[in-house]
Image (cartoon, rainbow, N blue to C red):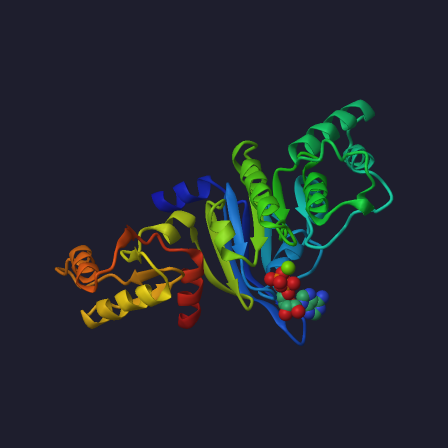
Length: 318
Ligand SMILES: Nc1ncnc2c1ncn2[C@@H]1O[C@H](COP(=O)(O)OP(=O)(O)O)[C@@H](O)[C@H]1O
Ligand SMILES: [Mg+2]
């Protein structure tokens, strides 16, 4: 064994798949997916229908793949699904809550089912409900919960048995921006404060880049990209420029910069400029162009890049 394989095999991946394929007949939801996922928070990103939920169900052993294999925390999904479900917490995409019990009863019940004695189960349930922010509503029936409260209750049931890994399928679905941010912050805390590896899905690329250490992008069942978030966010060498005014001023600047030989395009209120050939002082060119046009510069900053860009750029290469 070479030194390199010895060192990489020291840390077993939390999840690994090899040639994983899910053929539903009319649609192939996963195409020979081979990937490895480690600790921390991993964002699983893709448009609706990309195969995210299918992958999670296979990893839980709830669904049998057409071909290929997968291991979760060292367990083979084909032979050890009971063990996997014992150690993995799962927040499903769709509503899974009984409407006619309150959150406290529900979570205490699940804690008992996972083997805790009554007193410990009550304590554990109280802790978890406090963590997800359902302290005050815990005695209300789940059927009367808002979408945001339901998502929190679904998260609580995924955490109650003290899992070694959690799968969160679209936890921000249906949430308003404020609740969305709170949910994302909670997901991040599960990964950092509690040290539990998290696999979290979203069809919104922008929101996962903020909380994920690692990002896996699926596109129509194909693995588009799998890498550390820091690699996505490494400065792309591109610049973002904003001038005072509206679209007219922005386009005026964009056109002038394009005439000066730069590749640029609008993004929101700003103009992004692609990395220029060596030797060209882009900052200076921007300043001069802005001055020549009589515009007022608001800011020039390095474009960190966003997953949206990676996704749209990557998609053209597939
Ligand atoms: N049980 C099923 N039978 C047939 N097709 C399915 C089934 N479940 C999912 N699909 C299809 O597989 C593809 C991937 O679905 P899914 O894994 O739910 O994607 P995502 O979670 O990324 O939105 C979609 O085209 C979907 O219609
Ligand atoms: Mg889904």
